[in-house]
Length: 97
Image 1 (spheres, rainbow, N blue to C red):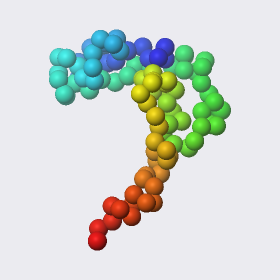
Image 2 (image 1 turned 120 degrees about the horizontal axis):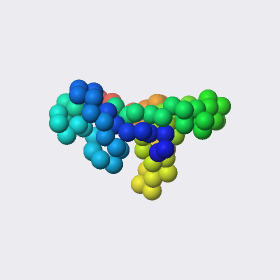
Image 3 (image 1 turned 135 degrees about the vertical axis):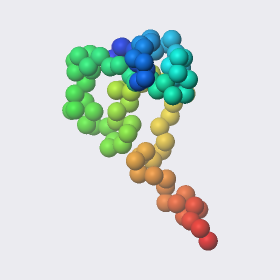
Image 4 (image 1 turned 120 degrees about the vertical axis):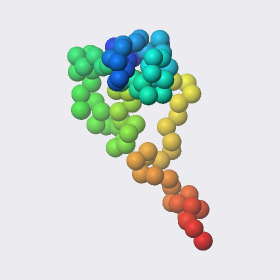
């Protein structure tokens, strides 16, 4: 995640390293949302629209930009495109009688 510089509280502006806090600003609890501070120069050097283009047209094409490990051992993308919703067999099961 060399493209992530850190995390910044949207309330007080306090900045943290990514491994320093979990999810929210310790000063503000659940109200202290942390924005990701990106190194845009590093992203520009490493990625381009052409490199993202070959991936499926879903949210998963942006995985290299997200503030997470792009190759985690626990992560598996769903078998259908994330933007397409559940397969039709599940849609039928969710219908009201």
